[in-house]
Length: 478
Image 1 (cartoon, rainbow, N blue to C red):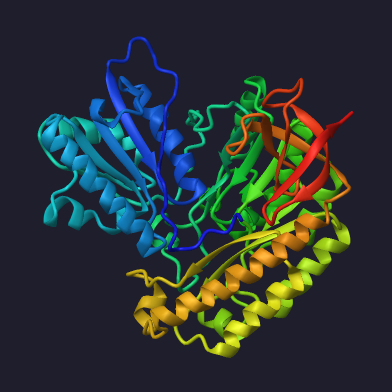
Image 2: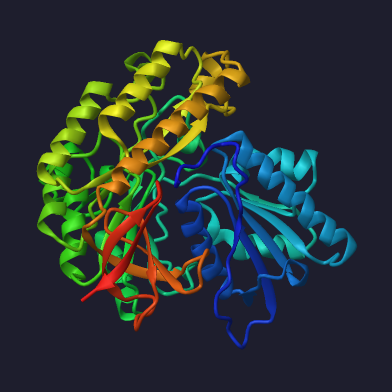
């Protein structure tokens, strides 16, 4: 299954890239949480490469250790804290000159605790302050604590050429927006990543052109809410003097950007994530239908099937509006898969609210999903407004029911592929069988099949003869 539940152990990923011969210092950088954090780590590694750092995957050898953090759930924060304990133990016992820093969402939220109260890090850097790393490192080298968690209304890092976390040279993340203006009551993102802003389309196209030149076969356009992408011909809204100037300017929205990317690189697969029901437009579906290199998959979180819960969450859609949007998508894109995010045990959630969520799942039958127990996050509206009054036992039971329902729906969706042929982009060797390749089709389903005269990065047609609830199993066809 591809669902992620809050109780699962979250693993960080240490970034390693080809080094520069002239660099003498070693950087160990580890990422947790959402895809945006992994994308940000690529930006950080690029900035530090110019400061003399090559990456390493051997923690004990590092001159500088950075952890890019997630603050969206308590479990993620506890995982990062355990890693910080590990870093400091190695620093104490094996490498006393090692410097330790925290990046990302936890940095913004817990800066005082990390630096002043607990004294477990040397440097704290927020998501909009990565360009200040050279100055912060100078402070650290001078023996001072260093912190910059100032949020920006302009920073998009569009002028930074990221290194690539995925060393297979096949898939790449391309950030197109940062921050979020949707004030969902459960979410810390507007407070840890700031207000929403879009990147210059030209810089996006140039980055993707470079990826194509390097041989990448697939890009994912990335943002907390990609559908709200909006770029005015003269720049951002702040660049205009008044509403009249904005009205006269040429605006590029997400559907137009998606078309521009698809046209610019017709042989590359295009994906995007994450979408928001209130901002997803029908025009996006029409663009997806027009360009065959845009994958037939939409990740569309709905969080709850209860209108009462959606209102308490400050979600700007109802359950019926969500269903209507999905049905319209399937009218335009009958082969499109859809995945979800769900929160269970939100304050005040009743058994009927829970049943409403299960009912919506039954109507859509998502191909996969990410399902979590509600975790109160300090600073959010939910933490200020509501008591976390659903017992842990009830949360676990409801989450189990939702995961079980999702598993049955996923099995239903994969079974629909049996006997059909689907195009697969080979990504890597199968973890379970070294004699098989593993890749994804355009619906974002994992496909495994026997190795032949193919290699990672190849597109192959695979006829499906079997499946599990998460994986399609087949053989290649001419």
